[in-house]
Image 1 (cartoon, helix red, strand yellow):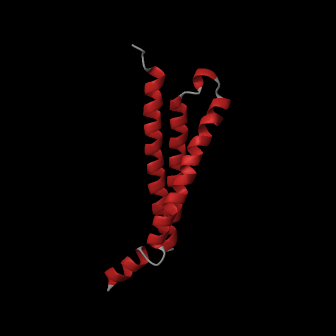
Image 2 (cartoon, helix red, strand yellow; image 1 turned 90 degrees about the vertical axis):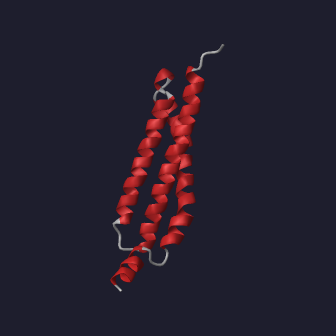
Image 3 (spheres, rainbow, N blue to C red; image 1 turned 180 degrees about the vertical axis):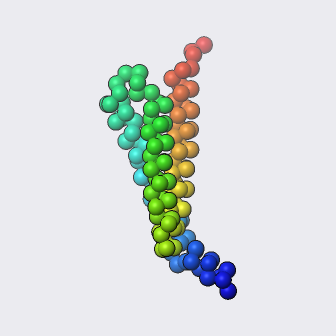
Amino acid sequence: MMIARRRAATTGPGYWRAATLDTPAWLALVVAGFFVVAPVAGALFPGDAADVSLEFAAVGAEAVISILIAVALFTSRSATKRGFALGIVTAALVGLEFAAIHFAINIDAKYAVAP
């Protein structure tokens, strides 16, 4: 009986709906933020300082902020908010992977030596 109550409190109504529907929405925000970071970094740090590593660091900071928001939501008693927190963490990690792939492609292109 206690296990059933704990499970209901953990994954109550709205948990999985929030986790699955809010993940793509937050991921869209993370990816949109990624494309906003590049021009802002280029404007703030012109020249060589606007390296792809700076963009990656900004996206990493965006992922950390997302995870901090998720931690704040996860402490709620609402199952929907905890599901949304799961979606935020998933989207932040996928966004970070997207940024890592972009970083790997650009760093290779920037420092590649022509034959």
